[in-house]
Length: 200
Image 1 (cartoon, rainbow, N blue to C red):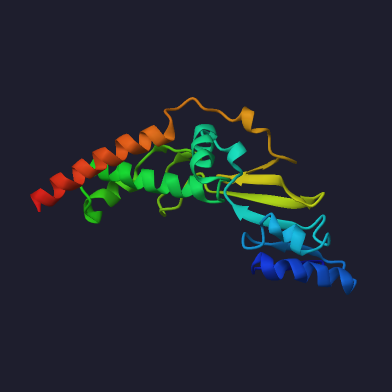
Image 2 (cartoon, helix red, strand yellow):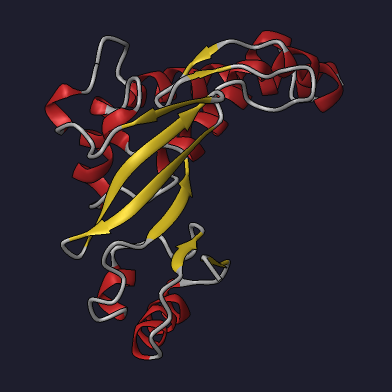
């Protein structure tokens, strides 16, 4: 085969690439986010060099407003986890929809969620008529010198070749600090929930 697509985890993906090399298999190897970790090249014993994996989203360095989030997250929890910025945006977008509806009742806040436009850490959060995010993203990585390097990103259907992520210092930070936003929004959402519960 020209390409072997593997959909498992890095613990098996590493030895698999190693065995491919030992068996003389020349096919290119590409895997999903279960393999796309810093451990994968190590587990492959060098055999992953030049191979590929994909991961949903983009690196924090390429996110619209992630600089302050990354600083706060790493300061409190250590190295940033892969989907932490996206989980944060998901929670904050849901809270914003509840605030607009002044309710925690899904029947009331889901219509608000469908038409919301929220400036998140990762990107502007908006949904299309099918309920999919308009700025959905995926990144293609290649192993170079034993490390995962981003080679191309597709955001909102547009692909950009990047070669390598820019330094952290190049990230934009012109919005209100996400952690401060979360505190104020969470409090406001809590007040909305109390009002809604009383009304019910």
